[in-house]
Each structure stands twice: as C-alpha cells, then as structure tokens.
Image (cartoon, rainbow, N blue to C red):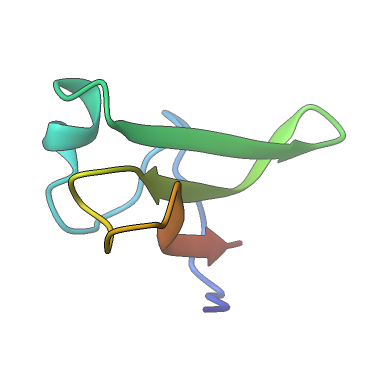
Length: 64
C-alpha cells in the first residue's frame, strides 16, 4: 500500500496499535530506510499466525 503521509519529527505517524509486534517473538516489525531516513516499514508474521506449511507472511507494509 502506498501512502503520502509524512513521518513526524519523532519518526511516528498515526496508525493502528502494533504493540503486539514488540511483545511476541513470532511477530517482526522492520523499518525500511533510504539515505538514512525512514522510508516505510513492514510487519512480518510467523506460525501460529500463518497457515500450516507457511514460514512467514507479510501482514502489512507501508511506504512513505
């Protein structure tokens, strides 16, 4: 999903609560950078949050 939203000076912008990604070792939040600036993020999930036989899945992504 492409978004034209600006990241604030603190590196944040409004979105749904993703705090579970910082509490569960099976959920992986990654920041994507370009030229030392945050360009987006990706949220990756692993079992048991994916179908049987699947190792990882992209749950959400956002580009700025």
